[in-house]
Amino acid sequence: MDPCDRAAVVELARSSRTDLVVIGPEAPLVVGVADALRHAGIAVFGPDAAAAQLEGSKGFTKDLCRANGIPTASYVRAERAADAHVALAQFDIPVVIKADGLAAGKGVTVAMTRAEAEQAIDAAGDGPLVIEEFLEGEEASLFALVDGETAVPLASAQDHKRVGEGDTGPNTGGMGAYAPAPVLTAELRQRAMDEIVLPTARALAAAGTPFTGVLYAGLMLTARGPELIEYNVRFGDPECEAIMPLIEGDFAELLHAVATGRLAEIDPPRLSGEHSMTVIVAARGYPGTPAAGGAIRAIESAEQVEGVTVFHAGTAEGESGLVAKGGRVLAVTAVADTFANARARAYRAVDQIDFDDGFHRRDIGWRELEREQA
Ligand code: AMP
Ligand code: GLY
Image (cartoon, rainbow, N blue to C red; front, side, top):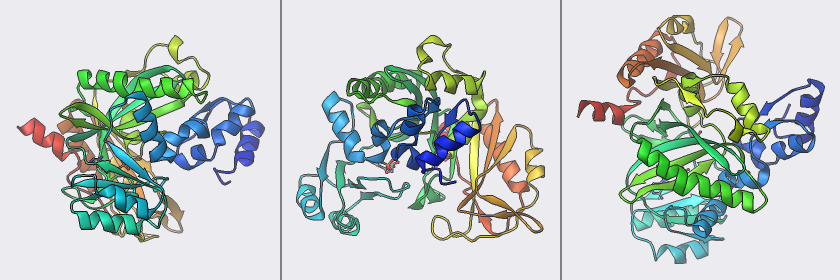
């Protein structure tokens, strides 16, 4: 079934008498699968198409921030390349050039020179762009559950977007993550809720397009405080795999409460207080064309390491066992009492896995490691 086919999803939910639909990726949200389910009277965790614009259009989000005083990089929207070239003159270098629509994490250029910025504009294919001020600081992600005007923080995490060690090479969907992100202190988290997440929820509710689901705020912790880099309208991948093992209580009930507008009535979400780390094992070639069909063995040994779960992201059953199918193949998650222990367990587990056509980053969590050693 095509998960973006609204009628087919509604029909499946009806015929299987599904109580709750949780929409994972952004594409079905942006095309209105949640709208269709809600219209059919089926509880759904995930925003309608109008609120999913927070992820679907960077220009929409920037305008919403500007109209509501939400801290974010200053910006100009440009409809075509020619306008973008003109607008570029008013920005200092470095500068950030973004395609307006969904680009699977690949639509952003942080240009270190004016020539690079000009090139990024020309490479964007004359579609709408956002040009914005470069923000300095450390990144952290805040996940909040939102149901209309009610928003509660769930967790924080830090992702590793670049394919190579030392954060080098092209952007990917994410090569590893850890949770929580201690750099987002309780005080900074409160500011991000008060100054960014809550005003966003209120603005959408006031516009008649309330948000339902998880709002993932990509933040830059600047000298001025937390500023919004981008929103996602879903749990990130691999952030999701890092966060889930930390959540206590009945998670389905939590999602159902959000889906049915009862978030304000229930106990706030609770985390275990442990730390987790996820290392992505990808197929050679990712984020370009990944090698398909490579054999994967010994996942059972990896799962014998204490606190470890191996999530399958791109695997299939081949004739003689498990094979790779897709770019990001496995998400190896470990939980422990401290960040350092979670990290050690995650790599011990990864080292058990026999996957010749795969690769992973050895330095997931390097910022946190440096902080602990400092
Ligand atoms: P986005 O897809 O908007 O999250 O952008 C991808 C990555 O580009 C972010 O995770 C940041 O590392 C970087 N980035 C985006 N916008 C900015 C900005 N205004 N200043 C500095 N870095 C940025
Ligand atoms: N890991 C980043 C994302 O899912 O968007």
